[in-house]
Image 1 (cartoon, rainbow, N blue to C red):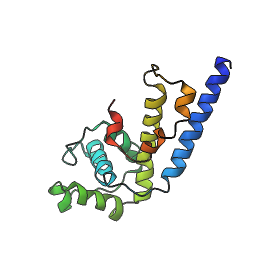
Image 2: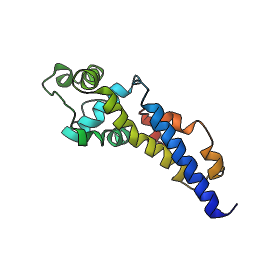
Image 3: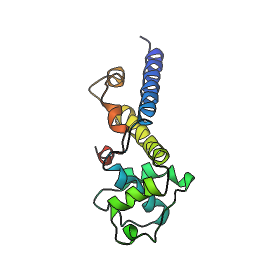
Length: 154
């Protein structure tokens, strides 16, 4: 197989896998941690306040929250859960009471799909497997369907 044909096949497989990931994540409910991670990332970016979820590194939270800046979800800094930094309670209110949780979760998961695709297919170029073998592995996009804080680690 020529290098151009191989590159085209890998690109098509990556696009298909990313498309399937995006379609699948539309039907997924929030995981336990997403209720804390996404609101924390958004308040880190929008308010420059790091009181929520300080125990996790901020990189993936910030990437996931970036698309939310365009939407401008409602944040009530007068709420007691914000004042007392109760991240789980604040997250539930942020997602389900004050905003459209499905929309925010979908937007927050998009950069994670992109990050997982980039990390899996383009980060090092020193893989023991061929690009085609990695493309056909079913496990890489599963983690991208949620907001995993450990996908920023290597």
